[in-house]
Structure formats: C-alpha cells, structure tokens
Image 1 (cartoon, rainbow, N blue to C red):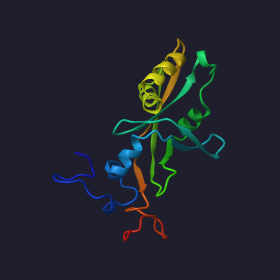
Image 2: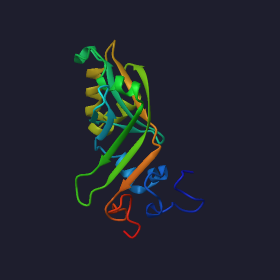
Image 3: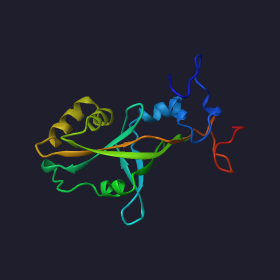
Image 4: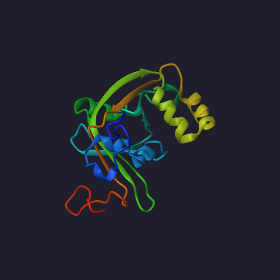
Length: 182
C-alpha cells in the first residue's frame, strides 16, 4: 500500500501538504510520471552556479532515474557529462515535470541522488527511450548508440520532498504552499 492510501480509499490530494511524498500517489503525479514530458533536472555545478538540464527519465515507483553518458565511442562521447562531477560532490538535486497547457500541472521532486556507472546502456534509459520515441524508433536509436565501450551513469533521485500544483484542486497560495480553500 502506498503512503497516500488507506485501507479503503486514496487520500484526496487536497488533504496532502506540499512536501509530502504521498503526493506521488495522486492521479496528477502518476500521469506526469508516465508522460513524455522531459524532466527539468536542477543541480549545483562544480563552480557553484545553478544548472537545469532537460532530460528523459524513468519512474521506478521509488526513484526517478535519468541516465547520461560516461563514454559513447560510437556517438563521439569521450568524457563523462559534467553534471556527474557536480553530483558526486553534492549529491542532491531537484526535478520538475510540468505541462505547458492551461491549466498547468507541475510535479516537483527534491532529494538525494545516487550515481551508478553501468557498462552499456542503463535499463532505465532503454525504458525511457521506448516511452518517449515508441518501441520501433527506440529500437533503432538504441541499436545505433549501443557499442563496446559505451558506459552510462544511472542517476537515481529518491524523492524526500514532493510538490504538486494542478491549478484546479491544488492552487498556489499567495503565502507559499497550496491554498487550502482552492
């Protein structure tokens, strides 16, 4: 049973506070986590400046996994992505997955990240490719990038803080957080 459910029914999203990981079990969060909207991945670079990178992701039910290359000889990648050094130094990140239509929906996650290097392609990268591109196009793309010497880093964010706004039942409050009267 997930944190947002009781023995009989899910807890309404309007009763959950911003920051509560139980928001991940709401219909809006589940829809955004299953979408083809890129995650906006935010972290602090080695030089101390903030960075945001759009990226594919795969939700495992406990972690938001994003993969990046350490090496990709077939596609010309000879050094690890710069964000890996920054995340090893400060293993915390934030992600937003949001829509551009009206009313907008926004899921924000914060938490520690764990980096694991994988020989070849990370399974979550392949799963994300199938979701974003469709099975046929993903198969072709994955065949092009998989080669001896390919190494990816699996960046897994385990959410400890979750925010959700849908501008219908969960509207932002002028004082911050969510307006309880919305």
